[in-house]
Amino acid sequence: MSFVKTAAERGIIPEAHSSVAHSHLVGFKNMVTHLIQNKQLPENGLCEAEIRHLLTELALSDSNNFPGKVGAGEREGRVISRLVQDRHFNLTHGIGRSGNIRDPQPKAAGSSIICQVTDGLALDATRAAGIKGLKSALVLPMATGMALRESFIALLHMRPNAKHVIWPRIDQKSCLKSMLSLNLTVHPIEPLLQDRELVTNLEAIENKIRELGDKNILCIHSTISCFAPRRPDKITDIGKISYQRDIPHIVNGAYFLTIKKARNLVQECAQSKGRSRIDAVVCSTDKNFLTPVGGSIIFSASKGEDAITTKIAKNYPGRASMSPVLDLFITLLEIGKSGSYMRLIKGQEDNFDLLVSELEKFGNERKMEVLGYNGVSVAISLERFSCTKDGDNKHLVELGSRLFRRNISGPRVVPCDGKNEKKISCHNFKNYGSSYDAYPQPYLALASAIGMERREIEILMKKLANVIDAAIRDFCK
Image (cartoon, rainbow, N blue to C red; front, side):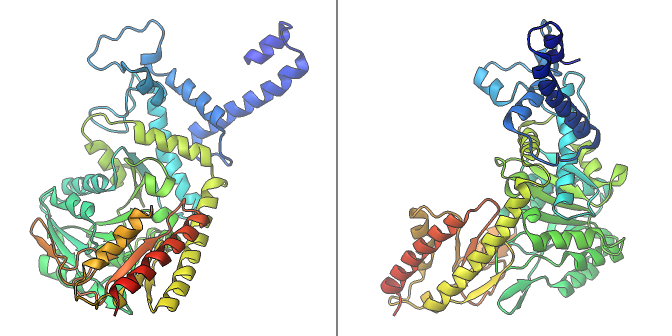
């Protein structure tokens, strides 16, 4: 019996008033029961008051919030700052135990529930986005690069003698360092240049496998989230090679859930009925669900003890911070299955189409060609700036600085002048930033990610026009 029913029976409030309130409370309780039993997103997002109420109930299940509790251990969820305690909703025990990040804690029933349910909600979000082939998810309190590293560690337990990774080149430091930090031997595979876009070189991957030998290769590490003009890797074809050769396949997905092309690639690979292998797709919580930076999700096309998500959870040393997990839990409850998240995804698609259209129009007016686009980013040529009055190309980088000074963040200027060589460990990359040694012209890459608004594109185009037109006057013959 709810407290409002008791209040009506005692004559504190009228029966008619209590019945409405009681009905709402019962509905909320049923929703929470369904949430915990099925680990599925609520059809419609919860309001802030409902989420706070649920978090309070869960926090009251953690021992640090028990009245009269005596903590005689070395870690008892004590927090000296009231502000910090409020920031964490009194959920201060973290997640996991010393042997498994998924293991429930005797002192923290509420936190343990949140940890387990959030994994299920993240998986359900992939189904809501149209991906049916993924079977398990693991939310980790670390960003994408470290989550990739945990994936490689799990593979090293399975293939202890395999130290080589085949890696279609993507000029992004964290994914490379995730391998180098484990002393793995990385073999970058240059993409192919086709119609000004960069695509996966499948033949070079197969040649490298034959050179190294199947059993010496830890995995193929592909990428489906990248800046144009690089295209997402052909992960279905790579997965077929992995399946035929019995080589694991790890996909750097970053923001794949928000991009239709990337979602379709994962769906095709995961539902290939064994003909194409995909062991894990790693993505970030902030790029996909607009949470603060610091969390990631590892998805697998399998579940149970054989899933890489299970192996990673068992390998994780010690407890972990709950903050990124809690951020995702709250966010997923608020956006729901059919509400704001799908609108955000649709908005991203519409805004990206608008950005491409505006840049094509912009480029035609200024003799600047759109070189390619991949669902989230678009590259536009800066070739007309490659020959200047003084023969110096430093002004190319200045274009990015001018945009930044005008409160435009994110665009990348890639000079492709042969001067920008980057050494990372023992690897030298020419024209670093382009993911290709000899891309034929400089370009500017811009993105329209989830959460960007139409008005931002309008402001971007106005300020871009001001910067480019000024550069034409200042630098071009």
